[in-house]
Image 1 (cartoon, rainbow, N blue to C red):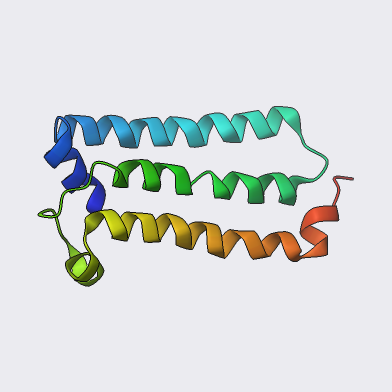
Image 2 (cartoon, rainbow, N blue to C red):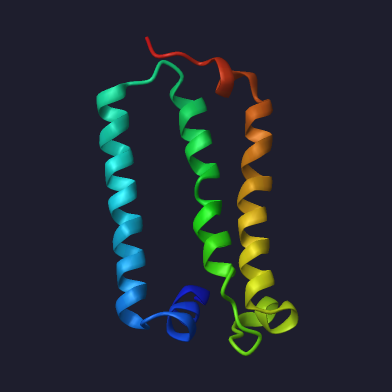
Length: 110
């Protein structure tokens, strides 16, 4: 919900947001195809690292945030930029503990 606001406020509006979404979809497709081809021995470990990458677009989208572009109760309370950075931090905080699970680190392809 915050992405279109940021794209409208700082970029070319809907066109830019469409390009951002298209690039995200292409990234997911290419990643999936790469994993089919690479067939990593430790798939869960690779998949968990790939989740960490999802925090990057949130943080990058937050950088040009304006105080006036607010949406939702959190954004209303702390602002768009802080909300996007908090979302990126939440992705990281939710993903890092997964590395503590031994099976994620050690499960290998048969």
